[in-house]
Image 1 (tube, rainbow, N blue to C red):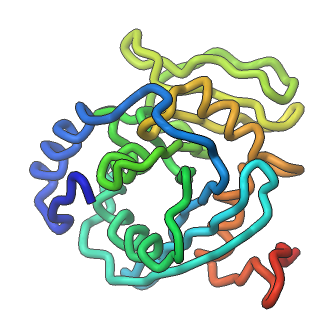
Image 2: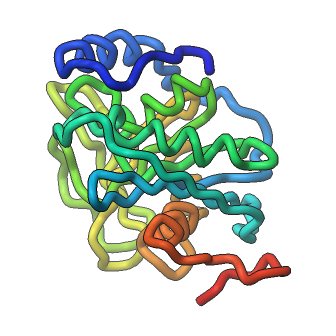
Length: 228
């Protein structure tokens, strides 16, 4: 890992680390041909985290591999500092993959964060891997309402800075919030998320990772077909 650090730190130290790592985010396209894309998500219960990663082909979105990892939660629940609580188990799950994916989509924020280092950016900088944040809810910033047609989006801004996009992935559905994680520009992030949305509002990589984090096996044994 390029910028590894301790996870069980004080809140003040966590904030300091976020500010330091935010300066290392690369907010432009810096990736090659995408052949695989992974979704990561996490579930928590009884002070334990269960992280899941599902790798799919791109752009075909055929499931190739999945992995999970569990560990105790060592950092308290503090809005804006969820990376310190969740990333350790995500790293454990990613380490179980046979091959690292070309890009990672996280169910969470990237630059759309008060200190510009949400989970997706935090994970991307640590691994120095291309990442995108795609969240179901907004953490900070304001935006105009996009047109109801799929593919419409408006800029999410905070203090005059564009930090992401409110994106309509399906006609007349609620938006998702897309933001730069690391080594991906915003327009590319929007386009990739749209290509990852099949018949659902949520992109397929994180939608499947959510199911695996909840305890489901989404890949049928002996095949590359999605269960359900």
